[in-house]
Structure formats: structure tokens, C-alpha cells
Length: 227
Image 1 (cartoon, rainbow, N blue to C red):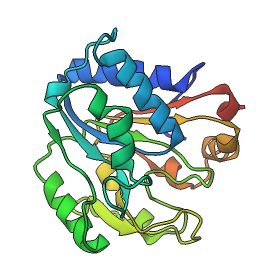
Image 2: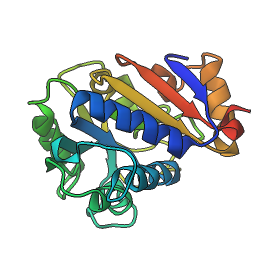
Image 3: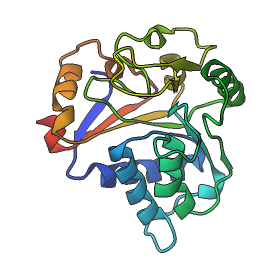
């Protein structure tokens, strides 16, 4: 596998420490958010720690919120990563410098092109937060999907679907070359359901998550996932 692996007692608490330290050192900057139950737990912990009355100082007023993948659903839909992140974190820590929803309507291909244009002014992608599915997917880069093989750095966002149909909705996702522009990629992996996929990544299998590269890649995993 690529990057550093840390087995931690609490994935949300470890994520909070890493994310808060990164944003403090960087003075804010771009953060690409994720979705799913582990991400929600991480964002709730980060909000508790860095919101009003918290113990961590994060310069939220200099943070720019983006998303690494999104379902093509309205921003307030229960399946929306944007809605999850707002409820768990953004609405609890005060105003950010900017917030850039990944999907706000229209056809997926057009939305992907629009978001790519929105990212064009970024010199770095800062912190990219990723989870991993039981099939080894990350962001919305699924095994067997053509989106996984995009190598053009000039195409940072792609419209995609899960070829197996297991994960519903058309999606938007950062491509692997776009993720590689991050200063720090943090994977958060929790629970026994992820054990097999993590073992396969660690063994060197060509799963989507194993293809991620960046300036630094950090895997925060709990004992259930690590086995």
C-alpha cells in the first residue's frame, strides 16, 4: 500500500487531531470532504473539538470547503455528502471563507465540467479526506469504472457510476490525478466490514484505494478494520 498506516483507538479523534494540526499549520486553505458514516463521526468530533467551547483552534474563516465526490442529488437530500458535512461540521463551526457544493443540479457531465472549472484556480488541493468502501473504492472511483483510469491531470472531475449497481445514484468524483495534487490525503477506515478490503490493499492488490498518491497519504484505521 502507498502511504503511512496508523492503527488508532478512535478514528474520529485521530482524524480531528490530524485535520486540526494541518489546518493550523497551513493557515486554512482547501479541504475536500467525504461522506458516509465514518466521515460523519469524524466531522462531528472535529466540530466538538474546534467549534464554540472546543479545545482546538482551527482558522475556519480561512478554510475553503470542497467535496471529493458527490451523488447527483439535491444539496439537501439525505444522500448528499454536502448535506452530511453541513449538518455534522460546517454549520457548527461558524462561517468559512468559501463553500463550494459539488453538485447543485443539471446533468452529471455538465456538472463535472463546471466543478472542474471551479477548481481551476487552486494551486494545491490542501487536505483531501477519503473513506474506503468494502469493495476498495474511494471517493466515487469504483472497481472496473472507466473513471478509475483517467490519467489526464487536466481532467480533475469526472461523472461516474458504480458498474455493479451496488452504490446508487450517478456520481461526481475527483480523479486520481486530482487527488494527487493534495498536500495531505487522509483515509479513515473503521469497522470489520472494511477488514477484507484493507487487507487486500495492504497486500498490494490493485484496488482503487491502493492507487491513491499525494504528497503525503495517511491511513487512520481502527483495530476492527486492521484485524
